[in-house]
Structures are given as structure tokens and as C-alpha cells.
Image (cartoon, rainbow, N blue to C red; front, side, top):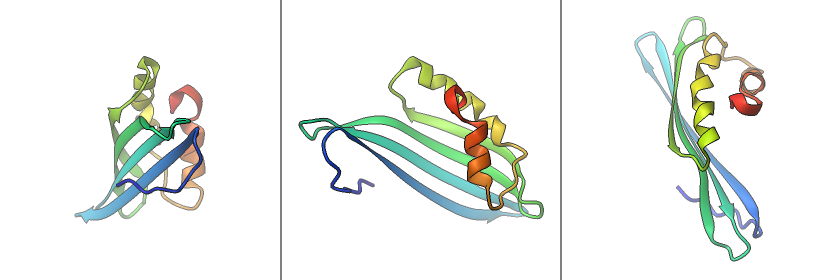
Length: 110
């Protein structure tokens, strides 16, 4: 899905989508992330694209498994970041989850 935000040249646009469903006592969360860069001539270049899957215990709301599939990455060092997705295991889905996840995955870890 390409949503045109009408951003000026030399800008980056991030698209995110998330879906959720239950499999027995597990909440499944599937996400998709895409970053695109628009150059001065308004040509778009795909920078990053990932698919993410989380398994969350329905009773405790704690992440029991996390997997990520890099679809497109621009640099060799970018391929190291997906290996750190396991840092999300043990986090509880609650207010503040995103901030805690970002803290765990900051810098070269994310």
C-alpha cells in the first residue's frame, strides 16, 4: 500500500500496518514496516522493509516469541538488526510497550 503524504523532496516516509488474531490462547500480531526516500527529482527509493510476527500469551499478555523477516535492506550492517528481535520476548503488552521495545532495540540493535 502506497499512501502519498505529499512530502517534499529529500524526505523519508514510513508506512506501518498491523493485524491481530487469536490462535487458541495465543494472540498473534503481524506487522509490516516500509521506509521510502524521495530524492530531489521526486523518485522514490525503498530503504527498509520488514515483516514482523509476535506470539503473545493471551492471559499474561507477555510476548513469548518474536520473528522478523527482512524483505529489503540497503546496507550489509542492516542485516544484523533483525537478529535482535528476540529482545522483545518477555515484554508485556501494556501502556509503555512501544517505548520499552524501542529502548531494547535502539541503536545498532534495531
